[in-house]
Structures are given as structure tokens and as C-alpha cells.
Image (cartoon, rainbow over the protein chains, first blue to last red):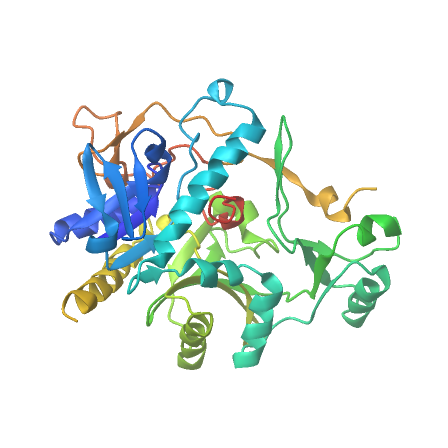
Length: 325
Length: 73
């Protein structure tokens, strides 16, 4: 059987659920934030993991062959903020549940989409660029540094035409407001206090302008490529995510060698799924980054990219492969 | 002392702060979200003429993957 680990408001999963239902394929969707109202038990030494769903207990050690590891919800996600315990207690409860669910990885012969450890490793942007370059992708010249002199050197090498972005998780959650740091162009660092650069390492890269942006979704050996364009035909911002409402996503096949590299990249990372960002600059394709568990619901609808169908094919393949073994 | 990247920070809505849209409910019997804006309560993903359901995280539906932290963290 196929198991889906996510949360109830992850509507991207609904595309796959609908497809599995249309094919009459059995699956178990576990919205992990609901376990706090149900139950989950790990038993030893006769190793069993049982979870409840709608008053039924499922022994996933016996039933499950493939797990789609999407967006597991946290225990208090459904609680209004004023009804949640303190941050410290929430963190404690989260950690207990994380440790229990981590035990699912002990079940033998399960195919993960994606393997949690491989997924985690693939989140590291330095590793991403290292692997891309190793297997033959062009990548922008990059330094990751807290040294103002190194950063300025890169800027000068590229005529003060560079971009800068966060090395990890550009989301900042203050008590009253949240902030997100997109990729930004940077031309000058002399006005920035040195200590503000030294406080944390940052990515500085040559700016690949002009460019065309591509989003590549790799599922097993299938590659879905969309080119991202502004509806009015003007050049995109350095980070197209800042202009979501004004852009189109056009399905466009990649050159065969680039498509092969995308497949190879995902395999090299021991993944079965990956969302890769490429840019085309002066006729060459450059790898920017991969989101190993990247979002794709917005491509399925309204842009009709058949990612849910491809994911179902993959999940069914691995489920049947173990069923017949 | 302030990380220099913060000068580029733009206000957004994090997953933890979004308020659930009351026009949607999760139907456990079909394992999907339904839209209550139609008497038939269709699955949210099947709503015609929409760019896609915006159940909560409405400024991160499209590719803002980095707002979802690593699982559970």
C-alpha cells in the first residue's frame, strides 16, 4: 500500500489523492497533526508501528511499501494561537512526535519519495552547487562567505553585477510579523558595515542577466519543464517569485543533454523527486538550486502539467514492485 | 549589528500565522479539501475558473518552498 505523510491543508496532495482514487489504488493518507487526537504506537522487540485514522488502527510495518513524504503537519497546527501552550511546550511536544515518526524509517524495504536523510542533505545550497558542478552543470561563480573582501572580490570580477541570497531558510518569523528574503541584485558593499556581513555567511553569485527562468520537476525518470515568462513580455525580476501574479508558466522541453543532467542530478542526490531551478543565459543553461521537496500544485492547476499523474505512476510502480517481490 | 540581507526582507505571511479560510473544510471520508462556496461542496482542486485553492498560506502557494521548514523543524 501507498502511504502519504502530510497535513490536511496540503491541497497539492489532493491532486494525487484524486488520481489514486480514479485508478482505484489503495492508499493511506496520514495527516500527522491529527495524531494528537488519535494514536500512534511503536512496539518492541516485536517491531510494529500502528497509527490510527478514523477509528481504525493501521499497522504500517505490515502494509506499507512506499511512502510519499510531503508536508507532515505539526501537533498544534489546528489549534488557534491563543489555545496553544507555550512555545517551549510546543517545541517539546513537536520533538516527541518527530522522534516517533522518525522510527518509520526503520521499517525495512520501504521506498521513500524522498528518503528523509537524502532530502535533508539535498537542502544544503552549497552541496547543491557542488553536486551540480561535479556532474557537469554550468553554475554561476559563487562565494559563500562572511568575509567582506571575498564578497567584494566577486562583485568586482563581474563588474559589480552580482546577486545575493540566504544560505538557508530566508523566512524570518518575528513575534508580530514575518519576513521573506528573495534573491536580490547587489552592486556595492562599501556602504554596508563590515560587522553586518561578518555576522553570518551569505551567498554571493555572478548575476546571469539577461536570463530566462525554468522550473524543472523531476519524478523518477520523467522530467517536466516550464519556462517562466512575464505576461507583458518584459524581463523578469531577478527572483521571479516576487511577481507571481504577472507571470505565465509555459511547458517547454529542455535540450536532451540538459534534461539528462536534471535526471542524473536527482539520482546523484538519492532522490526520486526534485524541483530544479535553472536559468538560460546567453544560450547556456545554468543550475541555480534544487528544492528536493519542492511545491508543484500551482503547475498542475491551472497550467495542466501532469505531475500528479506522474507521481502516481511512480508510487504505484514502487508499491507493485514490492508486492510482487 | 544586523545581517545585511535583512535590508532586503519583505513582509509576508508565514505558514504558522495564516488564518484558515472558513470556505474550506477537510473531508476525511474522501481525504481531500472541499470548497463550501458551492452547494455541492466540490473538491477544492476541481474548482473551475480558479487559479487553485488558497486555503491558508495564500502568499506561499506558488513555489515559496523555503517557507516550509524542513519536516517538523
